[in-house]
Structures are given as structure tokens and as C-alpha cells.
Image (cartoon, rainbow, N blue to C red):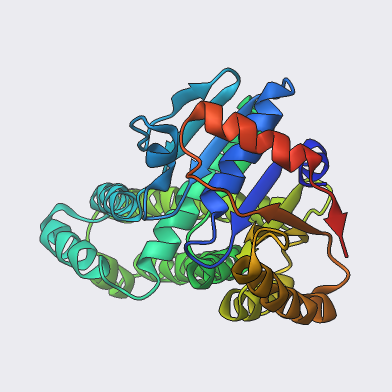
Length: 335
């Protein structure tokens, strides 16, 4: 069921409560699709950096080959914020007068810990990755941060597009006002020039044009990402969980948040399911899990639900992921 869903999509997001195995499920799905002949990019936005541990090799912000047909990269939130602020600072220094360079640096430094900065910077990188990735790969698989961070992130494209649109409108009004002042500067009183400064007309017009170009590119990128995230034929979100009370409740809430953000949820994957026939302790555990899954089915019964068994060892390395991929292929979905 999960592999069939992946085969029909170009972008998959895997999310859920921390520690439920979403990185393993995401990586296994990506590997299975690569084995099927598709070009796949596996991207981790989880600050835990589990992708490198899982594949037993360094994985960083630059793409690395993980297996035939499969590349991977990790987007470190801290590094992403640093790169984002450096790019913003460079752009602002080019646009602002030289004597304001110190103020630009001060503003950029204060912005580092501003609310939403990490999410906004990460969203920029995700949008860039989707833009470039869809041109190079058949499938993009995102292993996301724990539920709360991911829910906010998926709602951001709409907000950022609207915010950028607002900046464009304000910039347009400001340009019109500057033109009025410039025209006033042509009369005998020189009122407009006294405000705008001498000889600044062409420089200001050029600066306004570059600001509009930057904002236009930003708006278009967010709009493209928003279109991808909202297209159920192209994109799906897969929620991975454990059959426990808190992960089940968090899954129900995450689903509601994704629905409000307009992101289609394609499936639920219950990982580490206890066996019913391996002794009294695990049988009792299985029965408890079944009660929690009843709550899940009552709330989200319309979604396919895939159950994966608890394994005796860790899934680490390509061979183990390959074996786990066979379990994904053999598992059947229930409702």
C-alpha cells in the first residue's frame, strides 16, 4: 500500500512523533522506489540527523549517493538559518546606502533568534529543494522533524506567500509616493529633492526595481511550493506512529493541522507493532495497542493504515533497509 502510494507521487513527506521510526520508514520507501528504477532524493529536515546514522555514512547539506538511483541530504536547521541570514544580509547591503551597512548587520544579528526564523529559513530551503529536485528526480522523500515543528512548517507557504504579497503592495505604494516627491522636486521650491536627496532618483529607482525582483521571485517560489503541497495527485503526507496513547492522539491532531494547511494525508503507518503470539507479555501489549488503534480508526477511518511489526534488532545499513523494504511490500493495509 505505501509503496503503491509512493509510486504514484512525486513528493512524499513523512512525519510523526519523535522516536516512532519515521526516518526508517522514509528511507526504506525511498530505497524501494530507487530499486524500482526511479531517481529518488531523500531529504531530512530533522535536527536529530538520523539519516547519516541510518545509512552508516556522512550525510550533510550537499547531496551524497546512498544507493543506486538514490541520493540523500540533511538540512541542518542551524546551518540553514546561518546561510539564510548571510544571503539576506548580502542582499540588503547591496540595496542600502553604504553608511547603513552597520545597521544591516545589527538587524541580521538580531533576527537570528526571532520567532519563526528557523521555520522560515527551512521553508526557503525546502522550496528551493522542491524546485530543483522535481527537475532532476522522479521522487522527493522528506523525513521531517517531530509533529509540532512539521505542522507549523506545512502551514507556512500560505502565510509566507501572503506576507510577500503584502510587501509587494507596500513597495508599490512606496514607489508611487517616491515618484510624487521626485515630481515635486522639479518645481522651484525643491521640496521633493530635499526629502529624496540630490541625484538619488536613478539609484532609488534601480533599488526599487531590484527589491521588486527579489520579492517577485520569493512569492513565485512560495506559490509553487504551495501548489505542490496542495496537489493530492503529486504530493502526500504519510504519518508514522506507534500504537500508543500519546502518538495516536498526536497523530489525530497532526492530521487536523495538515487538513487546515491544505496538505493531503495519504496514509498512516503504525510501526513497531507487538506480536500477539510471542508470549503472554507481548500478547497483553498487543491487546493494549489494539485498543489505541481502535481510537485511531474511529477518528481517521477513511485513511489506509499500514501495520509494521516490532523487529528483534535495529534497522541500520543498506542491507537492513532492503530487508525492511520487503516487509513494506508484503504488508497489507487495513481501515
